[in-house]
Amino acid sequence: MLGRWLDCGLDTARVTVLRPSGRAVAAGVSVVTDWPASLPAGTTVLLGMKPYQIEDVAGRLAPICAADTRIVSILAGTTLATLRGHFPSVAGIVRAMPNLPVGLGEGVTALFTDDRTGPDTRAAVEALIRPLGLAEWIADEGLFNSITALSGCGPAFLFRFVDALARAGEAIGIPADQAARMALATVQGSANMAARASVSPATLADQVASPGGMTREGLNVLDAEDRLLTLLTDTLTAARDRGEAMARGA
Image (cartoon, rainbow, N blue to C red):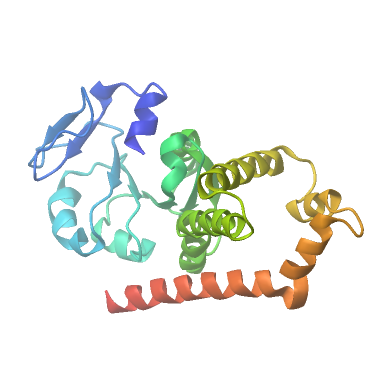
């Protein structure tokens, strides 16, 4: 996330990273190992540590937060109510769930807050997130694990699909190196085409498939008894349920 913001022109002088190890994060970005005595007016704090560390971090951070401090949390399984309990004086708190491609500016970040967070903070957070890709506000915090299963875990599932497509090409006789290159380029080009199209991906698939042709025969296999839909629904359900179990364990 930070790398993308810097690539988009964020002034390194406006960024401070608190990192106990003191290791550098990017050229020109200040890294500190201890908490400052106060925060500048209008500071946006991004919470990006392990969720179990929230109590210790809040114990040091909350006393130096001002009325106009904004907090953006990317802590999985840490609810807004929990955050508000740790930071009672901060009105502007937003939960965010980014996925891996945000580093390219092509990611998805789900956002959630409540009525205590004013429109100015909402607008400021959305402006911060927008360079990372799609910024999607959700109305129901209970959907966070489902959204994480779709967009957060989704890149791994898509990577597996690309690999399987390449291996399937190899299985029908295409040299492995060519199948890998072709599968990746096919997925990349098709995703770009779907993103720019004025119709849904389902409609695009039908437009590509001529009656009785090769594509239609392949789609018939994927579509039979909704096998692809069932497989992906089972995949997302398993990921979502694991997230909910982890949250209960925490």
